[in-house]
Amino acid sequence: MRVLVVKTSSLGDVIHTLPAVTDAARAVPGIRFDWVVEEAFAEIPAWHPAVDKVIPVALRRWRRNPFAAATRAEWRAYRAAVGATAYDLIIDAQGLLKSAFLARQAHGPLHGLDRHSAREPLASFAYEHRHAVPWGRHAVRRVRELFAAALGYKLPSKAGGEDDGAARANAATYGLERARILDRAVETTSDSPPRLVFLHGTTWPTKHWPEPYWRELAVLASTAGWQILIPWGNDVERKRATRIAAGLPAVHVLPKLPLSGLAATIAAATGCVAVDTGLGHLAAALDVPTLSLFGPTNPAFTGAWGRRQYRLASDKSCAPCLKKQCPRKDSARGKAAVQPPCFSRLSPARVWRAFVARVAANR
Image (cartoon, rainbow, N blue to C red; front, side, top):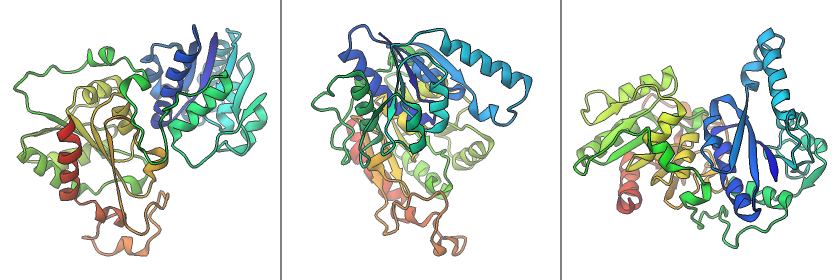
């Protein structure tokens, strides 16, 4: 059986789809997948043994020059790639108008979320088969339910992804081939210090843990004998990483790495501290002990999900607000104020205590 999955972005959303592919591979003998994904994340589906062909798209780039000759040529190449196979089933796992449009270019019965379940209800009218998947539960669980409904199997009795985070996934659930990823990692010896990776970069301004907090956490961790590695993906993150590491011999700013290099670095780490970011979800998929910090977002719905994933969420009355910009007027009070204020409840000392108790103790 040949199935096409359309799940283009973001990094976390792509990773959230992997357990559903693992479920299907276990439930349906001989099933194989092709996967449509944004070019920036094209490496990830290829790490799953049930995925044969990754078909990259570049919607973010194409939108900037929709009528350019290069854009038209790449669009024709995409249509030829998805049109070359008569699929037994197509699953739009994104539930957006753009993903439904991409899925319609392929040949085969198209499944997706119904209008009450999709993020963009109009997308459901593009599907031949629509499935109800309730809101109010973790994103991993919702994708697993969609695949089970589309392919006609029952989820495992302990499928995980519950709202309370009590169920713990393991590396086998995500299905990534860790050995293949670790081939790129720097080797360590038995006397090497434990490695802690700071996953500090994220998209929303409100999801950033304050930079002075990262600096203080780096001091606490290095004093305790940890080696800290700080990756970055753009110039703003590079400058922040450099400021965090300044004058601390045990803190190292990494060179700019491709996604495979970041995955290898994370996979070889002893532990991670992360904000609500796609790389935090990658750490979960690689089964690396991680403490994730949540201010404006709700970890019950989109928190890093896995066997050794630990969540520390703000208990401030305004959290989670689910806002990209902080709506509180007191967020601008003085240079010394914690920005955003919801993170004032997650001090470096509290985070370090939680890391030692939950992550370091279970490494």
